[in-house]
Image (cartoon, rainbow, N blue to C red; front, side, top):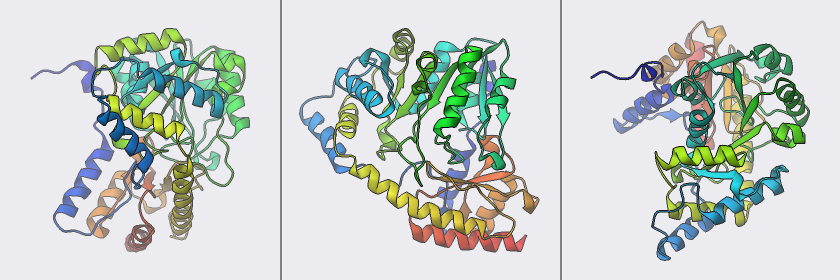
Length: 387
């Protein structure tokens, strides 16, 4: 069977391959310590689950508006005004099947053949593939551990060409856990305004912050920045709702209408009763978020300290999300070689950094229990010592 040229440019997900291999080993009875998960290991908070159950009992099982339930769109806009100082209204919101669809809709609506999209590396692995599927050209800008894996205003400025349409910003970051300070965000906003490009800010981890780190939406930097900003977010990470598939896009009414049109011809509305769970997440108690972040903070300390005590390995301290990005270059192995050998010899599953645009590193998630973290670190240390 012949497939389209656009599909030939898309790289299969390395994360899914490694996760599937680790899962198969577990099914065969092997004791695997997995640090691959890109999702919280906590159950969805009870009040959110109860709201979805109530919606089912109330018959909220029909088709709904492609752009989302009006009450949820209004609640998301209110959240963005209250928490992020972004003056959105319900008409500025599109409810999507997870944060991923919000970005995919955006790329299809905004990017044309030959348009360039600037993506700092390390990046979430789907960004470049979405750009390619939209027939655009991803422009990868490498960052370093010394800069905490954050792109500088000068790097951004130098990467912009007459073909640049969009800049992808992710803070807190997957895979590095890096968080841009408000001052750094404002400096990047100045470049966006100066060069008149769009910026999409992926803020899916915005509530998972440590050590007093502050999250500033780039659109809140100034009215001029707001005019060039698009927000992608969702409920998966902050409320442990990964399987619910509820995300959202915020932007101009014209953009939202265009993306809703795309969604109307692809998936149509997000699962109706799941949207009522998302509504409860926004309007209910936020104690569940605070408790989850406190647990992550403890695991983060154990994970980061343990890694930096292993000779030959190093990682910056993450200030957000639930990942550490570990430099393994001193071992002489590529990220894929390191990850494969670690799984085979010590039964520890990690994600090779090549999936995120950096073949010198691996990503470990600490969205797992402390006992697994401690056992996995011991195995990791033994593996490195054996090289």
